[in-house]
Length: 90
Image (cartoon, rainbow, N blue to C red; front, side, top):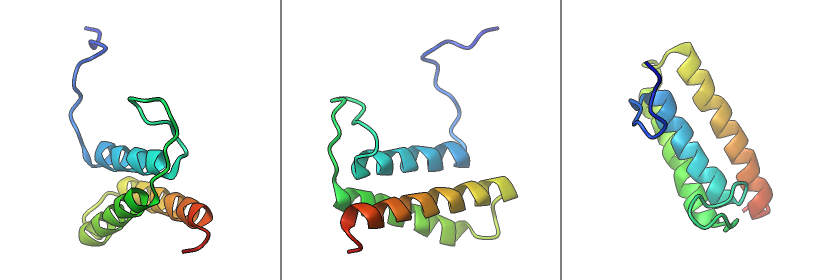
């Protein structure tokens, strides 16, 4: 049976992390806001979301699959580099 286009999918750890990272990309101005389709950087919200992902990494260390741990590590490295570039190193 084909999945309905608007059917809700079960949220797992990977989906949750990617969702948070997407929010951070929007706040960094790397993606348009999903409702307004405008690029609206907000570095305070970007930092909060990146810090939240960092807290998740620390609190889940040793409890993730290798794939989940690598995904979180790569997302954080990318987001942190982008944040430093946007904030001028602040």
